[in-house]
Image (cartoon, rainbow, N blue to C red):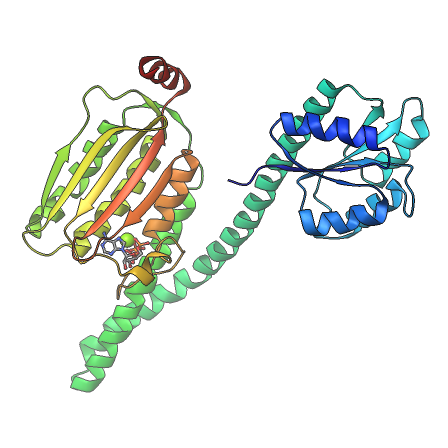
Length: 363
Ligand SMILES: Nc1ncnc2c1ncn2[C@@H]1O[C@H](COP(=O)(O)OP(=O)(O)OP(=O)(O)O)[C@@H](O)[C@H]1O
Ligand SMILES: [Mg+2]
């Protein structure tokens, strides 16, 4: 993983050495610029996650650098800490007015420097996540709006097609009407899945037993699987620690994965489900099936909304599962070794107290 990058901009060499060595000790990657023009070049080439910016510098002062950074869409979100002379209130006010995120008085305490950077990066991370959520919410609203608009006309088209079918005897016309009805069903299924996606948007995490959720999900799908002659084999860990889960949403995620398996497996096939502790403080839930598998070039698309290889699929099952597992701070991966079906692995994090227990036992 890429280290967090901090750019130090100051024409005073001692200051740069002092600040960068502290930042390196804190685990950041650093670079330095000695004047305003070089600062702008380094922002371009070094792509910092945070900038410490002196005010009085040759060629271009800190205010002008700040103005340019905040005027560009690409750089306006990079947190900037202005370095100001101790008693210069005007400096601080002007810097904050232009858009500085914080300031430090020179000479600054290195402990304070670390704390301010940590806090700014934390705020920036939350802001970034909020922006992404806003974008997703806007997209969700759009999709939801379209679904709402086509729901009623679709019912009309489906209903009328059924009535016409009863009255028409011509074989070709009947075939066309069947096609209309099939397509209507496909779109109705898609709308149902969009509703499901919307309803899975918020996970409320509470302590719960993952095995219980697995059993409840299997209970829901077992008749369909058995009806197709597919066996379901469970191998669940004993006394699993309580995890932070939203039972209803987690069940929805697992159900979507099992539905895919049931759809992919032929007669006499099998679905095997296991739960077990996994490295790094996780419980791993693995669902393997002996179905048709997924081709290598399709694997990269399977979590994308509306990606489907099925005639009547909406392509939302794995999108729903992915979103839910992300909300559980977990991880979901899919493998499909050639000729060996599909393996879906879900990792869910242990609650902190259990993680500590695990670390104590292992060390
Ligand atoms: N267990 C599996 N075996 C084979 N292919 C799979 C499996 N799981 C997923 N896929 C592939 O991934 C695609 C996307 O799955 P996803 O569940 O998101 O959508 P879908 O099943 O096509 O439609 P929906 O779930 O919305 O009804 C599927 O169309 C299929 O090609
Ligand atoms: Mg599916």
